[in-house]
Length: 261
Ligand SMILES: Cc1cc2nc3c(=O)[nH]c(=O)nc-3n(C[C@H](O)[C@H](O)[C@H](O)COP(=O)(O)OP(=O)(O)OC[C@H]3O[C@@H](n4cnc5c(N)ncnc54)[C@H](O)[C@@H]3O)c2cc1C
Image 1 (cartoon, protein in one colour):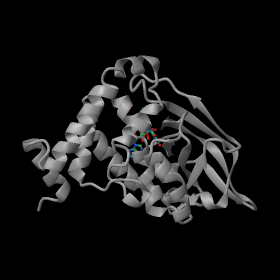
Image 2 (image 1 turned 180 degrees about the vertical axis):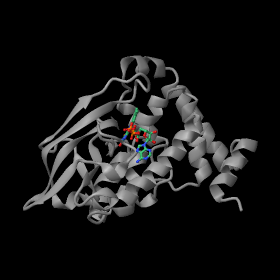
Image 3 (image 1 turned 180 degrees about the horizontal axis):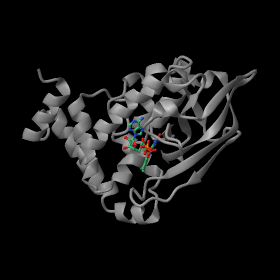
């Protein structure tokens, strides 16, 4: 039995863009890449960054909102459309550009799945309009793939949460406006992890840029939480229920990365 995603890949391998909609999408993104990205991407890689304005331009052609609900400003689409979009972006030849421009795709899943409606409404449309940038902060200096062992702590206080710890290798880490942060709220292992939405100007939150051997134009950073005060309503999803939300995002990220290669 072939599932929908595999069937979509097989269709794409036979003939890129199996419907008029797929072909129109491919042509629109191809024009965008040829006009707005390809002529500049080498210079952006050398400079170690790309203009923030590119997020607004990508939003204007519907790229940032592709696959998200209309209610938050997105354009729902099938799996093949997202594959077509990733392949066209990859034609510019810069993995860092894709990682940086599309960084919201690794943080919005848990927020849309489990975030309170008021929080989703305040954060998500602005990101899909390219007016704000979102980042996902899971990996720590002690390890990334073993999410159940993360050490950053969130303690409940009278006025909300206090975060202590650090994250590393965070894409869009310096310039994001909103960070979805995984932190330990109880116990050991996978059961005691929760997610928090932290804004860039939150007291006790700071960032340090990282240099890399590749993905030069993608901003990558270390994050520091030093008694960082996070309001009670910034908990995303139920307490201690962050692990499965993060793992679902990891699976989607691996699939997307394999498309871009
Ligand atoms: C350029 C770049 C951008 C990134 N962007 C982000 C981002 O935006 N947000 C974010 O949160 N992270 C980000 N990461 C981190 C990335 O997700 C991690 O590098 C990845 O999860 C691996 O973690 P690690 O590098 O700490 O390696 P480790 O976790 O130390 O793993 C090293 C090896 O050990 C294996 N291993 C680890 N634990 C176990 C175990 N329990 N059992 C068996 N094998 C195990 C792993 O499979 C791997 O082969 C980024 C990384 C890079 C390089």
